[in-house]
Amino acid sequence: MSVGEEVRTEQGRPQQSLGTAAARNLATTTKSAPQMQEISSRWLLRTLPWVNVQGGTYRVNRRLSYAVGDGRVTFVKTGDRVEVIPAELRELPALRSYEDDAVLSELAQRCQQREFTQGSVIASFGAQADEVYLLAHGRVEKVGTGPYGDDAVLGVLADGAYFGDQALLDPDAIWEYTARAATACTVLVLPRQDVDQVAERAEALREHLREQRAIPSQRTNKYGEKEIDLAAGHDGEPDIPHTFVDYDASPREYELSIAQTVLRIHTRVADLYNQPMNQTEQQIRLTVEALKERQEHELVNNREFGLLNNCEYDQRLQPHDGVPSPDDLDELLSRRRGTKLLLAHPRAISAIGRELNKRGLVPETIDVGGNRIPTWRGVPIYPCNKIPVTPERTTSIIAMRTGEAEQGVIGLQQAGIPDEIEPSLSVRFMGINEQSIIKYLVTAYYSAAVLVPDALGVLENVEIGRWR
Image (cartoon, rainbow, N blue to C red; front, side, top):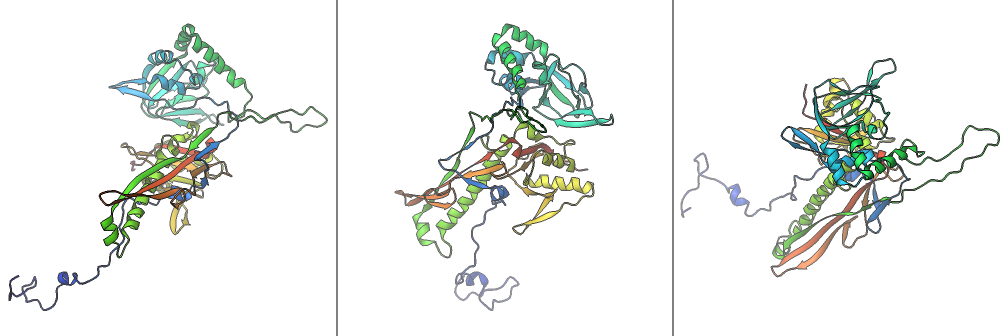
């Protein structure tokens, strides 16, 4: 603006006072601390009881168990053809720990692909069980007979499940339920006759199956643990049985996992721009927040110790109608004593709310740290956005019993590490380089352990996009 030129307002009138843009040059601006959208409630980190681990390793000792393979089978799809990965046949109890890959490949090649329409009967109650079914895609209902002769759904199987595996060990096995396709299903069928033909030429397979048939003869309880011999209800002077409690000779050990990053700050920033907020403190604060978000993600999804991957398959349930109904939540809770909490993606919690509304049910809420948390049967349902949602808009709901005293799920950490700012989280000064960059190593150590299998359960393949 030239000398003598008159300043005018937007309305064209002469300006009569100092403008706000110029005034800000002399004013101290009130500002917030740096904000971060990634920060979530992190209820898992807040509710999980943390156990201090010395030496970086936690060993879970259990009673000796004779339980055999009970996993999930993986398939490869090429066009409309589906094949089972040969090594995945080891998930069948009868083939657990069998090492000959060539024989497994031959068995995989003998699997026959079959398609079943919705409502089709795959296997009938009372019929001879002479085939193993590997469910590549779809949902199958296990239907039994109710107390008054009506049909009762005993369970639901989904992708990767198998049934009829008793046919490999017992030639006289019969179907104890009817397997019915709840949706269109793609199934691979392995006839027992084909397995016998392969076993005739493969002596190692024949011997392996013979050893597996001997395992059920061990006296075990319903959890597969060696029975403790007891006497009860007797009178007189009978011989009291002798017994001992056998331990697992190879208990699982959980090593602490690690999440790290190197934070870099220029000395000029740290020296000159520390008012009114300390730049180093804010940089560390935001880095630690990101590290904790990653920590919770790993506790849910890590392949080694993550909750979703460490849940036993007999503790994995499928929703009867796809959506998370109250009946499914009841069945999830019934699988363990003393469930302390449920974890669900916020969109899954919304789906639960829709199903409750349809039945005219209003969930109770509890106050947790000033937050109103919905509950089911008194068990709080905490939101956790680290539980993945698939492109098909399905997700999982996790149920846990927690604490060492309750033989539940626990978090693992090691407090007292050097330069610790929180338990098991440290910020270590790494020096200043020739470009005047200060470096800090930010580290978190953590893991999670499931003390007994029924401490953790998952309701899988929950549909969250169905509106009706």
